[in-house]
Image 1 (spheres, helix red, strand yellow):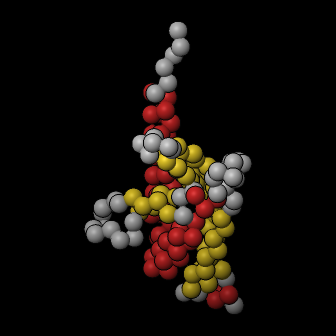
Image 2 (cartoon, rainbow, N blue to C red):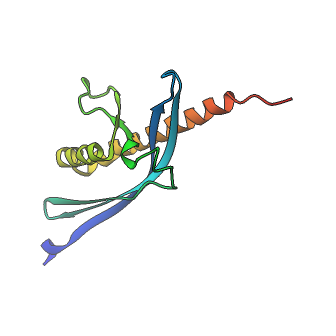
Image 3 (cartoon, rainbow, N blue to C red):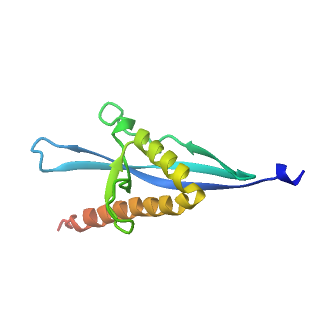
Length: 142
């Protein structure tokens, strides 16, 4: 009877996604940011882990004639990294993120979620760095 007990947890993350397009001169790049919630339920029954990943649509509306949902990418660590402690950033679309999650959860189980949290924080750090640069670029009109 005790073998039928299931232990489980739910993790909800607010992630940041970026899309960019080169403008006419190819030197200036327009970048917009949106958030997307990702929920991960993970449970263990006996020796088997089960994961359910829920991915919400992008937040706020954007001009769908200019920006498509597939234009937005999430920053993760490259799966092709040469050393275990090296960080190589890679921007991936939603379909590739799903494969990163599947591969990571399959190979590492719930321990992978720690690494994924670092990727989430990395994305927010990039967003805040961009905001900081944008603020520095504003000149006060006199």
